[in-house]
Length: 270
Image (cartoon, rainbow, N blue to C red):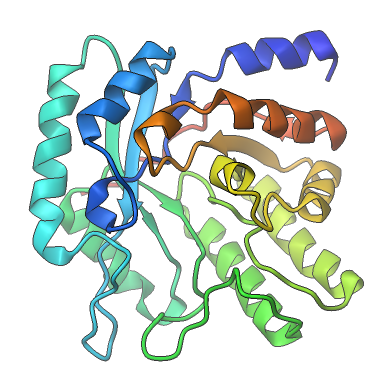
């Protein structure tokens, strides 16, 4: 990709399907203000993908997702705004969801019943967070844990229901480099074979987190995996993030990534 091509790609960042709302309990601002900010910055395709409601098998409801009791409000509020601004922006309503292998069929049926139009896979936990789940951002040198992580993402990719994989490089693995490369290549290869994009996550850039992990994106470049961007908005101002966009494009150029721009939505069938 030449510098001129990069500039053109940057100017065409007119989409974002990774937007959260106050209902997840760790985002702020009015939903309408997110939409106004996106429109003002030239976004023409926007998706709300708050964390999907989930009640663990021990009966404890997740505390960082939309509560089950607020699902109706989530859809009704966004649907009204979707209609209000339909001449200015195309809005879709979905969820960011985990892939828990033992519970996935029920999880999928639930979000379809709620009315989700699309899903993105956001791997935060390999297993249920209750009673003893460990967030993947916590440092680990466990090969078993890394293998579970990569297998979950690969299985999620192959399920055919996720539009893309959010922050696929979130796992904070500190162990053997060759093992890391082997497991990450499984993810990147599956993404290429199934044509499911991997997301460079702008929240990771904004907060200077352990991701984007360049060791991951180097392999994605070698595998020619499709790559997209997501603002991962938790504040009104992040409904457009031009500063992180510059850094994301630098990563695209550095590793010659297969940046596809706006992903093709996989719409859920009712």
